Image (cartoon, rainbow, N blue to C red; front, side, top):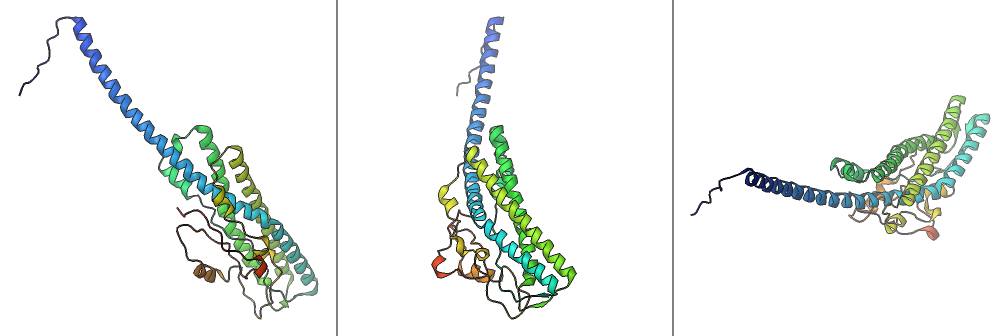
Length: 280
């Protein structure tokens, strides 16, 4: 096997030439690595952008649903406030049936958290990264508010039953719950609209098929239905039928979560449960 020995350098020009070849070779190698890395992150950013768009498509659909029922929620709270005021003056709650409740949704931020962990967000253009951060800040607030809202409506369900005595302190507490529920409703609806505005203004890749899969006919939501049949006891729950809903709608890789209601919709308003984006 022949071994090529380095050529002896006879003068400064040849020495500089050898150095130049080495420097250029190193530069080409480093540039190649940087190009490969740049292409890698471009791919990661594109995947993150798509994933975030799908997650915001779910939020947009859930937001459409929330805006749709927000007036039903306000009207139901108007009615509950009137019932409590009248009951406080009489010292007794009247018989009251199932009052319904707003839908409970996921408001997912999983794709956002995953993109942060994978550092794909850090390689996005700053302006787009910042807008995504603002949008998912609203989604996180929706995710936090919805369970608190459910807690408030669980407290309001203390009114549902065959009729009982009502003291001044409990009446004041129930009116506070009505106010809290009204505030939560305004937060949920307004934040949902804000996410939709950001998506439209900044061109997020919203999948309209995913978005449209969430909303059902308005009369099918429990809070938009008439007050239900009066139960024979107290201690009801706004999600009393949640287990039945889950069992009747097994989870699949192409289905999301149906709004939790406590009563079946009228026949004229029924519709198959909406399809949603695959869970991530």
